[in-house]
Image 1 (cartoon, rainbow, N blue to C red):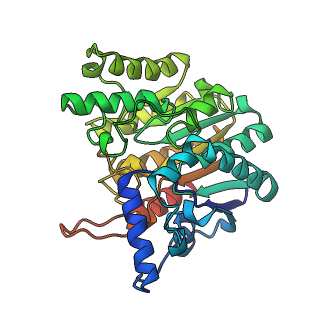
Image 2: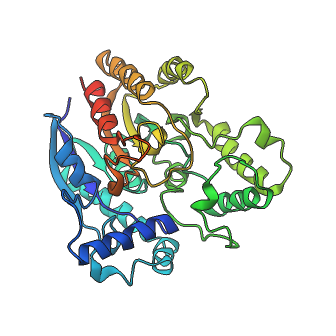
Length: 361
């Protein structure tokens, strides 16, 4: 196996009220010297300190302006606002970090294997672009563990959230209206954490037949498909269009044990010599993971994900395909290893450690 080179992109441009509140609370504590140690500034720093794996070489971070990171400096306070983050996102600011990430992988990692650790899913697109150009876009399959399908235009998802709020129904994502400002008329089309796969597919960085989504909770169920409201149907049609184009989905099921064997069937469909794994930790939200930016659904249990890692490992051992890169994303460094009053503890670090131990064994 190639050398694994881990790197970070500390981009955290979420404009959700929850995210902004947490950042301002952190800046206030920092200004008063009340931040408890260890104070990991981003997931890469935490990963470097807490994950134990001899195969990994840590090679640094793509520079990110401090106001766009999970833990801004006190002097950034004026910029950490809904308006400034919205301007950044709507002006395609995240795509600049796509390009910076792509350049970093080209110059500092290839031909070795990139391992990206980030609070945001959008830098994954830059890694995929570099790998696609290096190996050939038709030679790579991408397995994405994620509670959401990040190829839905932002305004379509906004309209769905508006429908959910107006009708007081748990349409797909019961709390998505908490993460989307439903007062807006539309959201400008831009490259961001919720649309990066749309860019990847449209530009054939990854071919639809070589994209596999695992654990999605926003897959249109029958109840949704029967709702006649145009806003719901637009979401359903956009989603299923990608499925018709060849994208494979393994939605989150109430019968998670059955998903393990279904995942083996998904792996059997892979025909390319190379595989990339993108792991959004919200795929295990409220189960193993509390430290994720989007806690809007209940995800997969830890042991289910570890069994899936074992299945991938068997494919690697049998040389069905070669692993050429992976990432762990949407990690909220503020809540790593947090303990709730109920006694529940965040196990994000354990999940990543166990997944890597099994995958790379």
